[in-house]
Length: 188
Image (cartoon, rainbow, N blue to C red; front, side):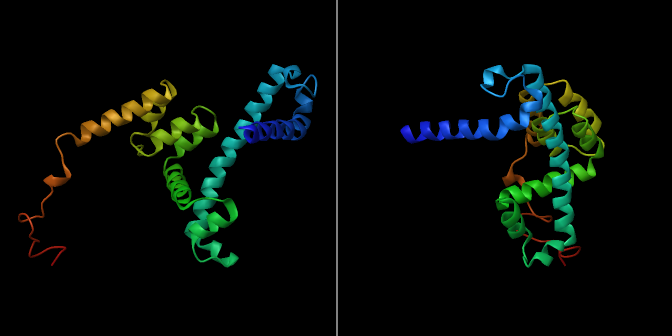
């Protein structure tokens, strides 16, 4: 525990040295943190958050373009997952998830627009983007804008349960009966 406490103190000093100098135009006094201007710090956070939002979308879309174009191979890396790991520290899961999000953002321009304009937060967008299609995009965005993240997730779970009610993975049989394949068509 002593090591953790000293790590926290080290981080606090690092935070002071690096961050306060960046916030100086917005602060009434550089130190201690209790003397920082609340409105100034709040404005700085809103500005940086907005820059981060635009940067996140642009990063995801650029990542998708790099993957689809195959241009990452010019860096001597044959696997896109390896490229994302090498240059951005992404795990394979993060890479595939980022590509899924970028694909969804690309096909759902209204979601992208609302996010860039700050009308919807990243956690809310991340929750609805996996279930949104062009026909439901506007409705889902309006729902998300007027409900909490917990309510959004609950509604998505409820609708998914309704759609799968009465179905089981054991209900599937091949056409023509259990264990048989059709003699003509795509399998022939």
